[in-house]
Length: 232
Ligand SMILES: [Zn+2]
Image (cartoon, rainbow, N blue to C red; front, side):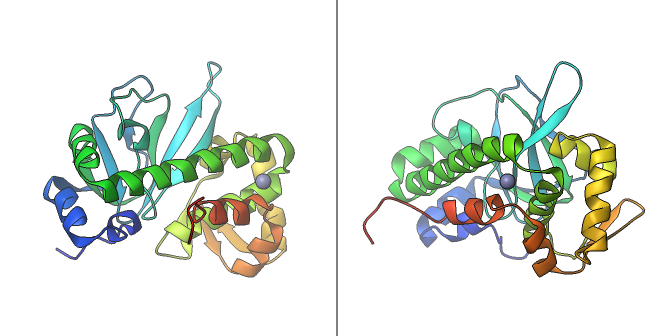
């Protein structure tokens, strides 16, 4: 078994990291699988080692949109790390991978005992809050093509490959857009030389072209996760 490569776990002092890992089970999750459905108790939190867990909100008419994604930089189920919580959203697997799964009650107990764990979770939670604020503005104000470029960069940041398995239907569901809108946006990105799209797979050809096409939110969200109000 190789060492875990979750950035949050790796940011902890070794004794705190070991305390969490003692209670962890390494699991594999598959594309399309749901870790949790809306209304369900969050029994476990997941620290991905690879792959992507998406938090998706669904409307009564069947449409959906992704609120945020979690890869090896984060933890899924953060809202249950302070008090027991039900999920308001679906946690679905966007990219097959592995995670360290830990009972949510155990994480809460360890966070109470260990300030370093509490601080790590609080910082991540604050980062997600800022990300959601930015995403609310992004959904209301930014064009589909720029949002798609941002979203693809965020997927690419968390993937181990330049080729990502993504159907247009899936991208439309993540972006809250019509399939035709996503198709047009993907064609523009392809014409710019940023990506190649074929048979349900997106290949990232040029990060710089994709970054030039993305809205400002890509950079802002990445920066937000690193900011605190603490003195240096
Ligand atoms: Zn944006």
